[in-house]
Length: 195
Image (spheres, rainbow, N blue to C red):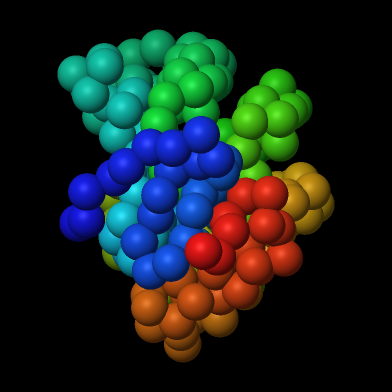
């Protein structure tokens, strides 16, 4: 990764860009927030931040362990604290957990201090990506597909409030998804400016 330099107008990014605000990737589990976020951060030469990884590191526990021990409301409170801290740190690309954008306080924080980009994928794409993984505490149910469908139906109208949208059709490579996010960000020179 290239060295990050600071100036008064934002973070000097790679590939001829200046990042003025943190880009926050939101969307359902399996949408590709972490994979796309890492690749986008590498392409721009800015830090990659992951709210779930930060929570796990601080708690010295996995997200499923936190859910099991302390419950979802406790986790959501910690998640808001971590997102706020990360938004105040160095500008970069922030990947959030699937439920993070549901809280109004998080949406407000993100819109005031960053920009949200919804990685929009349909239900079948998401199911194909998560059905063989046991790392999703909300899907540890008798019928994980029905659970995912219910979550999808509840969350899509909230994700639709994101500042920008990048389509994830399940066929697109990570590099092409990065291009789609950059295309969406091109409409926001207050966030990402070409030098």
